[in-house]
Amino acid sequence: MSATMYYEADANPMLVNQRKVAVLGFGSQGHAHALNLKESGVDVAVGLRPGSHRESTASDAGLTVMTPAAAAAWANLTMVLVPDQFQGSLYHEAIAPTLQDGDALFFAHGFNIHYGYVTPPDSIDVAMVAPKGPGHLVRRQYQAGSGVPALVAIHQDATGSAKDLALSYAHGIGATRAGVIETTFKAETETDLFGEQVILCGGVDEMIRAAFETLTEAGYEPEMAYFEVLHELKLIVDLLFEGGLSWMRYSVSDTAEYGDVSRGPRIVTEQTRATMREILGEIQSGAFAKEWMAEVAAGTPNLLAARRAVADHDIEKVGSGLRDMMPFLVAKTPEDDQ
Ligand code: NAD
Ligand code: MG
Image 1: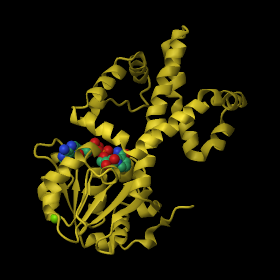
Image 2 (image 1 turned 90 degrees about the vertical axis):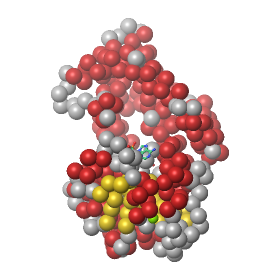
Image 3 (image 1 turned 30 degrees about the horizontal axis):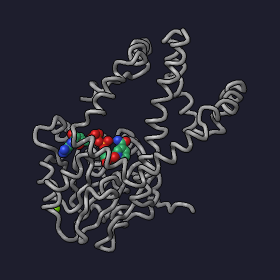
Image 4 (image 1 turned 120 degrees about the vertical axis):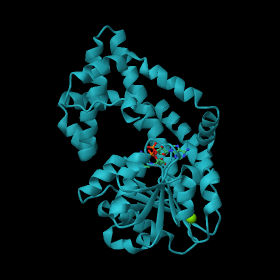
């Protein structure tokens, strides 16, 4: 089983150019989609809550800013780029009342459609165009004449041209320059959640702290531990990114490679794999989605407590000091982004 790919020649740029496009949200993805579409000649408006601090950023960039409801009413293609946990209420309050037959509703992640938090009427097209990269890269690659690959998926094809419209949108943000992979809302949602839970976020985050605590509890300097278990991770990830597992193993020393092949299987054991399957099961059954939506409804108490706990962890204190010693790093804190 191999995925279908689409490139520049497979897309008709005119389809999205004939639409009025509302981009709701101006965060990581929203700013990149809105600006790339505008520069591709698309008639685009940004939907933001009144008083949003991003309003001036968007209008200074030459974009028309409206409330989400006004933007959705004006548009006949609405792309939803607010955080996933707020999309359900935004849909019911601002989007659903404006939908007309033949309109298109687009997403960059399948969560709300797949788990049924958003159920649009049959008379509209529902599609996903999901760049496989953060918004700043989507923007930067477009400006450089290139693009970030994206996934497209069709949930509902009311007009008979939903896929062509999705490919046209992907063209407008620069994604067909790199390549677009066809998938389904189900596969995108489930693999995305699985990746972030078991490796990209959950797995890596927990491994870093466990390794840091193991070294410092054994009496090693926290600065040494920080460099070894966090800072150097980037060098390894860069190698993996450039050339996969073989290139990474080729590039590290033979000693490191032997440590990898002989010790790795003792870290990720059959029990770890069983837990991965269990976590995948919770994603597939909708149990994770239900748990997360209940957490949101309660005001995210566990998420906020976990954020405070990480901020107080020794690795964060020692890391902050060490990053100040490395002016070549553009050191970032959550506050920098507010
Ligand atoms: P973000 O948090 O960076 O930006 C969200 C935007 O929505 C901000 O402008 C915020 O002010 C606005 N907003 C927040 N709550 C709102 C509300 N209740 N009503 C109206 N506006 C509101 O979000 P993001 O990371 O760009 O994610 C947007 C979508 O793109 C999500 O579906 C996400 O899964 C998907 N996605 C993100 C990435 C990524 O790398 N960040 C990659 C692919 C897909
Ligand atoms: Mg409309």
